[in-house]
Image (cartoon, rainbow, N blue to C red; front, side, top):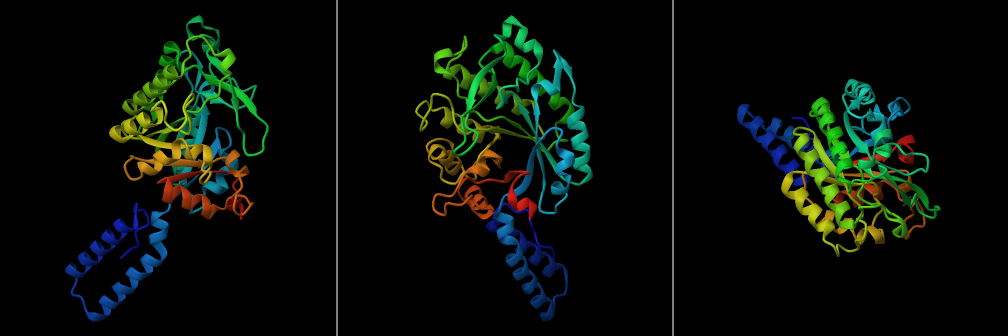
Length: 349
């Protein structure tokens, strides 16, 4: 009787283990010695497997082009796969000209290791020179310049950063992003384990908002992209990263509430780029919704990215430990997978 290591909860683990035991005892002439052996096996499974079964699965998180360097981490038996970020410009070199060779190469490596691949289709960037959308979006009048400057918080006690975000509130640009998603689904639906759309948070200069922008228009655009992705990918998991919505605090526009309700009703997964246990800003926005919808979402995938590693536990004054991240992600947020930065200390011990 093998131990089960992929059950979503200890309740399910008990049920499956007992079912295995009943099946074996009904199909075999059971002697007292076998019964005793089965009991010991059950205890061993519980001791070794219940906590592991209820804990989130570990994936690594990295960028396109960095998989070779991360291969030793990916090869670890406690790593189930990789989440890799691919930017829009890399995937669409010119209008309707797609280059998915990087995904194909990464998928071949990952499948060769018997692991799983999550792809993140990036339309927002966190460095001043990283305007990584196709040129035609930045030059075509119908796209309004294609991108808009945004600010970024790169971590605790770090100076404010800057970057760019695609103008998803522009219907013409949004149509192009959806065309990319459709092309990706045609090639990779069912081959990649999941696809996730980037975080919802953006931080624009309120004195220089682009033409056509409004918080409502941005929200509607993001929701339309998510609904499109869900229809395009029938087999792979579809996940929307959510942390904050512009203009909103404590769901005062019901953006957060509407997103979680839509996700629960439509088999959409949700996640986020930062697991920072009980951090005030997130506790006023996305975290309580993850807790409220725990067990009601198709999938929850959350990340410990490089900025996350800069935060310290206010009680210990030390960086959060692996156990602290895992406990909060699993127990409070309901995570199925944690995507760990390759810089995470425990991966190198």
